[in-house]
Length: 115
Length: 112
Image (cartoon, rainbow over the protein chains, first blue to last red):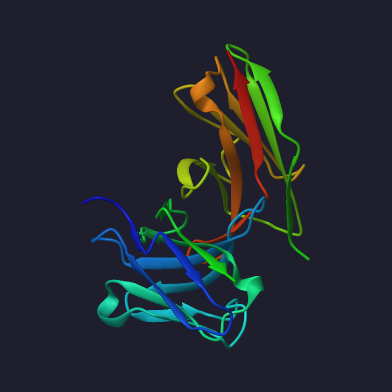
């Protein structure tokens, strides 16, 4: 297993376009998280799946953001009608639930630039 | 509101010295706290987790303390090396499910 994989690594899009990012977690991990990180800041939590169930999505930044995890494997994060303020690094992480407090394994992120 | 503060100024130290980074939090009662390392253009990498009933945790040259009364964690790197240069992030759980909220990170620069 090569860890958490994200695709693409970089995406440049025009304002108003839709973009979709993919995350492949570590295969035995049942939890998957999406974070956003802007320059000089720590990652900001967006949403969380346990298997295929999206258990927390209230922190998605707006209704333009949506995420799916069909069949509890890979996940996609979609941003509709992109705005310049959406430019950031989008990070995916996965973990295996063994009770309270488990480490998260992060991917390398997708850097989005909206022009 | 809940807040995590890390020194936003870079910490510059000489190789071989001990680096000490601080994480302060307010309006939390976390069951645990985590530290991550992040290199430029890469995702964070987990380093250490310390639980609320643990005062101190060690891993090789790393040591973390957790004072729930002061609401503070200290992260130490002993015998620092230039390869330790990176941004270090502390993280607390939002709630069950290990959803994390991160501090802004402190950039450490170790000079040879």
